[in-house]
Image 1: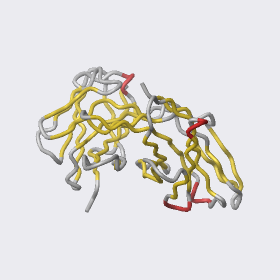
Image 2 (image 1 turned 60 degrees about the vertical axis):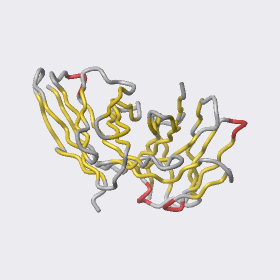
Image 3 (image 1 turned 30 degrees about the vertical axis):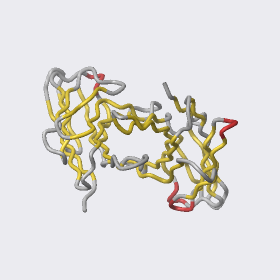
Length: 115
Length: 114
């Protein structure tokens, strides 16, 4: 069964600094990978996704992520953080089967932004 | 286009009471899902549906039942609520066309069982 690990529970970053969130996955085949963001009291919003092809994917809100097969990682980055980026971020691996489109989520990383 | 909506937003139940959470989507998606979110555990899949009239168990189905009588609606039922079911519940939907498009989430229902 697939699994997703987000090693950092909390990250604090200064506004304007760069941000990198780690995600490691365990899956026997080529994974479908996602990053979601959850603002306080809100549902999850899809930031970006990787299916195949270029290993560097661009998403919304200035985020990007890089798929590294050799490291089983899909880390999320943003060059310059804004105060509005304070949220919880979830990495997920997807499995498409005849029984549906199922996601397994990591435990999340909460990002705090200092002024 | 409202996307995915959930009713109610908040609810407090006593142990042993029952309730139904309603999820509705207006994107004509085939697949719908119910998750629960607990601190430090991400989202865990409770039940899901690949189409009208079909449902299947996810990772943590015990204590919950679901129904998908209409394509746009997916109901989650708690027949006899327990404090362990205190959680935030999210509904999601996705398309079944081609590769994974990712799931679209509702705003959540915060449930407290006392």
